[in-house]
Image (tube, rainbow, N blue to C red; front, side, top):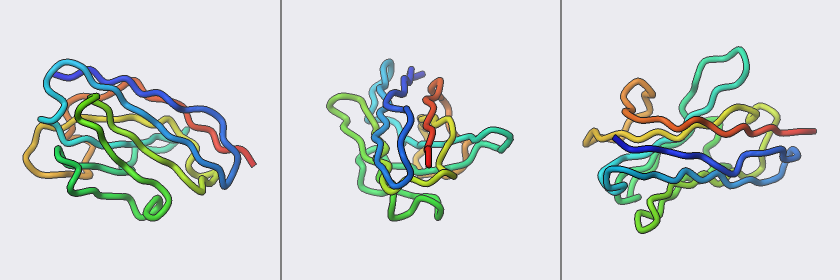
Length: 124
């Protein structure tokens, strides 16, 4: 099991940027694929981005492709989500998640451990 703590959320203006961080502790970080998900009020949780153990492969939701970048630093057990050109529809609670499967997945149900979330609010 791995413990995950997100940080970096806050209020950002439309078109602005924000970087989320997710610090992991417990089992070796490099044994996990990592993902970011989000949930807006009244909506279901949705996939945002995912990255393999080595960082060599990344997946993105169509809605954030070209605007968000997922990355990781295994040496400090942290995964990041750089959010650029944010829109009002990016407002949500953002969660990081860890997965021990050998394949990278967009399915939240397949992730093993989750953080508590960090709120991102995009204001106009």
